[in-house]
Length: 70
Image (cartoon, rainbow, N blue to C red; front, side, top):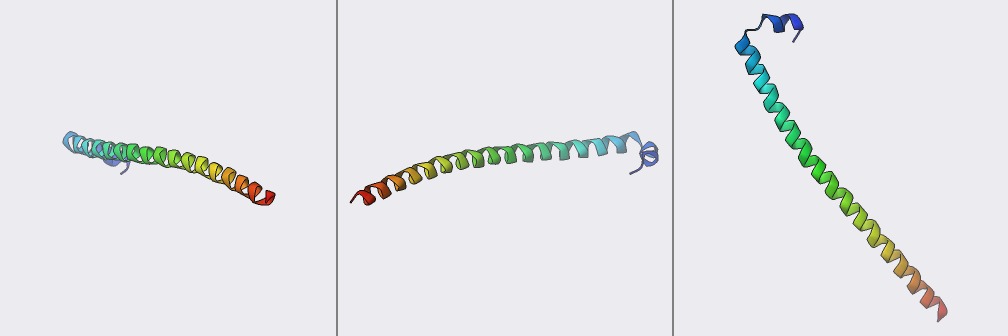
């Protein structure tokens, strides 16, 4: 919508548009919050998996060392 078209609208129409925009903004903010939480959970899971992988690699190296000694 152009600026000229906006100037031709009545106050009630402008208020309705603002209300719709506010509703959409609230919805998008809520969706953003949910996505940020999911991202944090995913990052926490990645860190945990990296720790587990490190432990598995250490254990595998120890087992390999023990097997080589036999």
